[in-house]
Length: 115
Length: 109
Image (cartoon, rainbow over all chains, first blue to last red; front, side, top):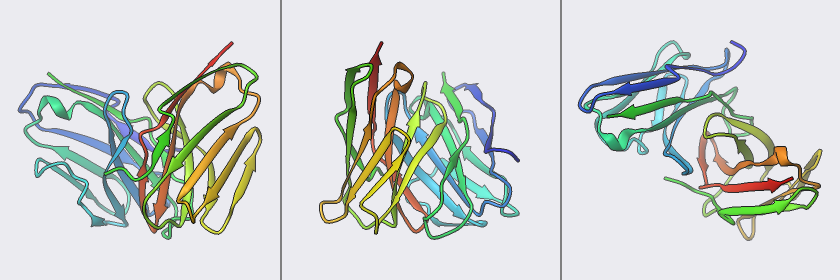
């Protein structure tokens, strides 16, 4: 696609429910990143994928968080038993190649509110 | 976890003035990138400087990198009200990309 696409753009959920956030990276981009940003704060690294594998899962805040990527394309971030502190914007980004020398493009984010 | 630390946290200037934001980091990097964010949503890539580069320009933006001090600076010259946004530095090592907390720039008309 033309850019990184995320859905839903906004989600309000009740505490304790599960949510799934989707990211469609730019076609051909092998690296995919998830970040979380609380209001007025910086970006907190969650996880990145190289192809379908995730070399570093250490950023996931708890075992309620999981992410997968299939077919080297779409990724889903799942939050189980949501808590109010999970409320944040979840940003996805992708880049073309490995090695860290390429521009990373961000989606517009999914704003999650847990009530 | 975050890697870079920007300072100042907030900066307020008059239109036409220059704005300088600094970023310090702790580990090795392949490159360092600066991003801009409006209204808490998607980030827009501004400029990338590789670890073997010392200075780079793009329009009104000038970025420097000092790997011995593990620091970078972003200079915006002749600022405009439309430059009001949050600016983040991001360090990249292989595919690991970490952001600082950002500098909130306000340019008053």
